[in-house]
Amino acid sequence: MTYDRNSVRTPDPDTLHPLPEHERVVFLKPLVAGTHVVAGDFTYYDDPDGATDFVTRNVLYAYGPERLVIGKYCAIATGTRFLMAGADHPSMGTSTFPFTMFGGRWAEETLDIVTGMPSRGDTVVGNDVWFGYGATVMPGVRIGDGAVIAAGAVVTTDVPPYTIVGGNPARAIRRRFDDQAVEQLLRAAWWDWPVDVVSANARTIMAGSPQDIACIAATEGLGQQ
Image (cartoon, rainbow, N blue to C red; front, top):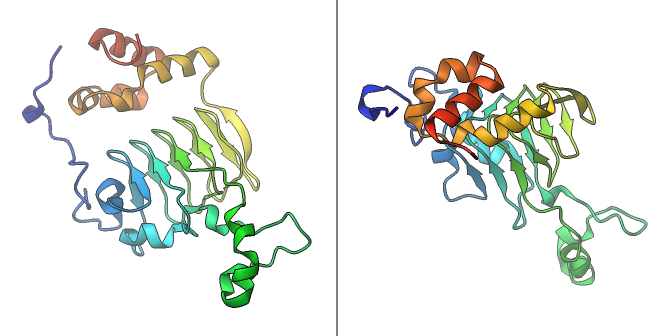
C-alpha cells in the first residue's frame, strides 16, 4: 500500500510551535539545531514557562564535548533535566572541591586533573520515550526505545527498552511487554517509518499490540525483516 503525503495532514517536524495556540509546546529538532543537543523528528518539550529555553534551562553543565542525543517521537514533560558531564567533580583524591574553575594558580596546578577525568560520553535517549514531570537524567546515561521515566525519577544508570523506571535513584518498576514483544517492536522500529505510514496507522500505534505493529511492518516491508 502507498500513501499520498498531500492527502494526510501531519505536523511539520521543523516547526518550532506545532500547536500555535499553545506556545508551551515546542518541537525540539528546530529549537536545538546547531547546539550540543540533537533531537529527532516530532520529539517535543512541554513547559508553560519558557519552553524555548530548553537548551539553557534543561541541559545543564554542558561544558565539554559530550552531547545529548534524543530520538524521534519522545514526549518530555515540564522540568525534565539532563545533567551533562560538566557537573562531575574530581573524586579520586581527598577533596571534591573544583579548584580549577576559579582560575589563576589553582587552575594551573589542577587543570590536568580535570581534563584527565573519565567521561561516560554522550547521553543518549532512544525513540518513543516518555519523561514524566521533573525527571532528572545523569551524565552518560542511555535510555532505550519505548521506555517510560516516571515523574521525579533520578536516572543514574542505563534503562533497557520498554522499561518503566521511577524513584531516586530510579529502579525498574516493570517492563511494558515481554521479551518477544519487545523484540518485535524493536525490529519494526515504527518511528523510522515514513510519516505517511505512521499517520495512516497512528491509531494502531497508540492502541494496538506489538503483534499489530509487527504485522504492519511486514506488510509494508519496513523495519528489520
